[in-house]
Amino acid sequence: MGRLTRLAQPGHFMRWSGAVLPWVAGLAVVLLAVGQYLTWFVAPPDYQQGETVRIMFIHVPAAWMAVFFYGAMAVSALGTLIWRHPLADVAQRAAAPVGAAFTLICLVTGSLWGKPMWGTYWVWDARLTSMLVLFLIYCGLLALWRTIEDPNRAARAVAILTLVGAVNLPIIKFSVNWWSTLHQPASILRMGGPTIHPTMLYPLLVMIAAASVLGIALHLQAMRTEILRRRVRTLTILEAERLDAALLAPQAA
Amino acid sequence: MSVGSWDLGPHAAFILGAYGFTALVIAGLVVHAILDRRAQERALARLQEEPPRGRR
Image (tube, rainbow over all chains, first blue to last red; front, side):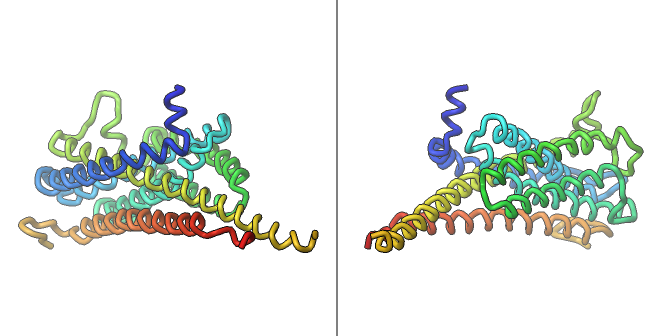
């Protein structure tokens, strides 16, 4: 625990993340290349969906990343509120745009799959609606950060809203079980094992791994940039205070 | 519509549209990450190099 706490100190984080990031980014590129090869050259067309099934290989990883990043933000929110760890808010702030982008990809690719398969781009189905709510929560959190000027107050407000929004995560996961939805039920993470044929399952799992590693690389980079942004803010305030003091000194004399 | 050696069928526009949109968003995330980092590094370097104006 002590070692983990030390790694999470901003100075330490900048050092180890700087060393690890190129490798993580490289692994993401390799996994994406392998995943795309399997998607286009190995996975067969579906007997019902035909070639349209290839949209699944980006839609499902995007959905996983959308939920994963929100889960990570909820854990970071606990770090901000309970332990008041400086890196917790940084991690949360860095995760929000990446999570929002993956949620948008999930919604758009699902919509583009829905039109030829369901005959419509959108239905107010429980799964689709809960994913839309997740996207709106991401947007709301990003807006809240910009609205509150004091970073500490913003961090607490965002952390509370993030935890409230976490209620949506089980709703997304179980919406297909709790309600009668047009969206198909879970076919990978389910009791009794996956229902997808291995020729499609393995390419999908590689794409999920690729999206996960890519997401982690983007998150690490965004966290590093956020730490720099906070240093810039602190130095700018110190510079402004020095300037104020210099202007006021002759008047006092 | 056919792409390369295989036919994507009647829904090719939807498939390519989905992949195109995803590529665009991912590229946007990567480019933004690079540009944002550079901007912060430049700002930090400027602040650290600049002599305090009050003491000139």
